[in-house]
Amino acid sequence: MGVEIRVEGLKKSFGRQVIWEDVSFTIPAGEISALLGPSGTGKSVFLKNLVGLLRPDRGHVFVGGGDVPRLRENELYDMRRKFGVLFQDGALFGSMNIYDNIAFPLREHTRKSESEIRRIVLEKMEMVGLTGAEAKLPGEISGGMKKRAGLARALVLDPEIILADEPDSGLDPVRTAYLNQLFVDLNTEMGATFLIVTHDIGTARVLPDNLGLLFRRGLVMFGPREMILSSTHPAVNQFFNARRQGPIGMAEEKDQAEVASEGAIPKAMPAPIPPQLMPSDGRLRPSMRRPGEWLREHQTKPPPGSFIDDQGRNWMTDWDSLVHARERPQ
Ligand SMILES: Nc1ncnc2c1ncn2[C@@H]1O[C@H](COP(=O)(O)OP(=O)(O)OP(=O)(O)O)[C@@H](O)[C@H]1O
Ligand SMILES: [Mg+2]
Image (cartoon, rainbow, N blue to C red; front, side):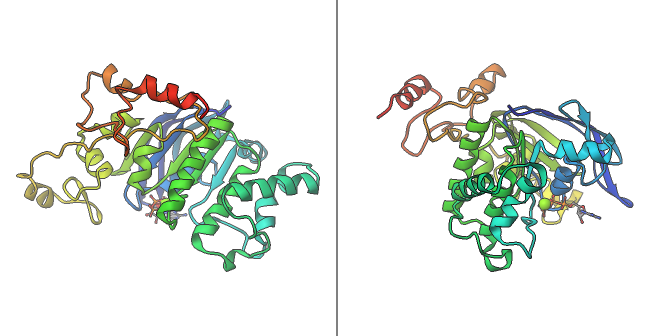
C-alpha cells in the first residue's frame, strides 16, 4: 500500500533566490495528487526535495517514519527504494539502450535473475507501449518515447510512491489519454501514492483526487479536486480555468497596474467539474469519492453542468445506477 508524505514548513532557496517557503501539506497515502504552477515556480525542485536529491533550507519531509532531509546517505539509499521517479527530462543513461535503462533499478537494488528481470522489463515496456524499442538508444527515440521509457523505469521496483514530473509533456493528446488511464489503473492495482506534476489542465481536471498550486513562492492551495475546481480564489480560478484574467502574468506575477486594469472584468465562474477518470476494469478506486460529495459536505454548489460526461450522463445524480452498471460484466 502507498504511504503518505507529510511536508512541514519546507523552504528552498538558491543563493538569494527564494524558490518557495513555508510549504506544508500532506500528500495522502494511496491517492493520486497533482501539483501545478507556472513555469519556474519550483515544481521540479520540490520533487527533488522529496527524494533527497536537493536539501531544503529548512523544514521536514516525513515519509514512512523518516525525515528525508535528515537521513544519512545509507538511510537515504534505502528510502529511495520506496520511490519511483520519472524526471522531467526522462534522465535516461545516454549510452545504455532502453532495455538496460529500464532494467537498471532491478540490477542495482535487487538480486533477481536476468530471466526474471527480463519478464518485468518487458511487462513494463508493454504497459507503456514501448514493445520493440528494447535495443534503441535514448538518442534514437522521440521525446514522448523517452518519457514513457522513464516511466517504465520508475515502475520496475513496484514503488510505494510514484513521482512523475510532466509525464505528459511532449505526448500527443491520444497518448496523454492512454497515459492518464494507465495512472488510474496502476493506482487501482498497486495502491501506490502518486504525485504528478503537469501543465495539462485537461489532465489535472479529470485524473487526480487532489490538486495543488504553487505560485508566489508558496503553495497557494492543496485539496480535493472538487475543492480546487470550484474555488473562486483568484490565482486558483485563473490557473485551473486557463484564463488570462487574474494575478498570474506572462512573467509569473502581474504588477499592480496590470491587475488594476482588469478591475472592471466580472469575476469568472469556475467551469463545470468533469467526472473523474474511472479504472478501466470497472472497479472503484478506494480513494475515489462520490461525485459532488466534497461539495455537499462543504455546502458548495457545483458549477453548473458539472459531472456530466460526453455521453450526457450525470455522474452526481445517477452515480448508483452508473456504478452498478459497470460492476456487471457485459
Ligand atoms: N540546481 C539549481 N541551482 C540553482 N537554481 C536552480 C537549480 N534548480 C532549479 N533552479 C531554479 O529554481 C527555479 C525553479 O525551477 P524548477 O525547475 O523547479 O521550476 P518548475 O516549476 O519545474 O518549472 P517548469 O514548469 O518550467 O518545469 C528556477 O528559477 C530555476 O532556475
Ligand atoms: Mg519542472
